[in-house]
Length: 122
Image (cartoon, rainbow, N blue to C red; front, side):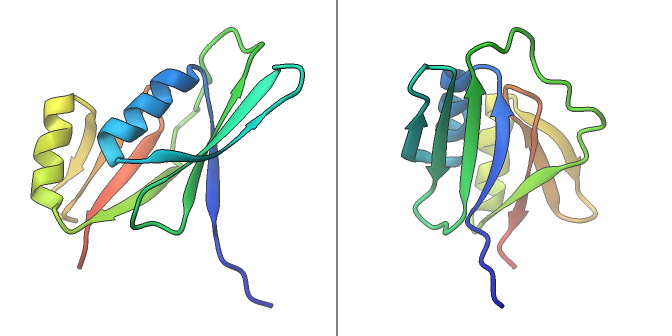
């Protein structure tokens, strides 16, 4: 059997704020939306031009408090050929939460506190 990963999911507290962040920070746009008939949840799949993998944002209407991410050791990774420019841009946005200069990578944090790893194309 062969498998191909096509998406990963995170639950978000404020869907609009998250969609705006992923568009601005990583150029990810909605490619598919699923709305519950009763309005209890909404799922938005985001993708960028150069990606075959999608980020699924799931929002629940009745959620009243932000999610507790525990130790937040899970992350998604993104590659870019414009690593230095991306780092400068993300610093301007104020979303860089950790830099590992020895490994040549950094992480950004989204509105819910999820970390996204940024790696140069090597």
